Amino acid sequence: MAAMENLNGERRRQGRIEVICGSMFSGKTEELIRRLKRAKFAKQKVEIFKPSLDTRYSDEDVVSHDKNAIHSTPIDSSGNILLLASDIDVVGIDEAQFLDDGLKEVCNQLANNGVRVIVAGLDMDFKGVPFGPIPDLCAIADEVTKVHAICVKCGALAYASHRLVQDEHLVMLGEQAEYEPLCRECYQKALAAEK
Image (tube, rainbow, N blue to C red):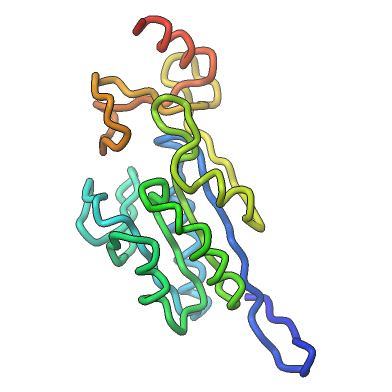
């Protein structure tokens, strides 16, 4: 991690916020795990968090659709991150769209204290609306990586996560039986067909 000198000539870590966002099945968690494993390999102190409601593959581990995994701490609120991330070099947060809006301030505080914060989450919900704290995090991030799935209808880059089942709840955990990645054109066609 890059270090810099303050006015007193002391060396200190330079904090930053990195956001990995995109539709479902785009590789967000895979990229988060890759970055966190590299930080661990570099002997940095790493702590990973995920919303406690995300129990799709594991109650505790962050697991990608390809079944790559890394141990994490489930949390109910973004404020818990500050309590559990003392003396840490790198903080990873998966499925950040499910956390509260206080996440922006938590990430800012960590980065301002010299912590590298890596956040992964959906940028839009199934209705195509910006999702949870992700838009605000993108605005304050030092780096935003937008990853793309492939549209299952035409093979173009996916734009949105289309929900395949009738359920109007904003939060609905699911996999390929419940969601499909679609490009903008195929997503619009799917929405029109549902009306």
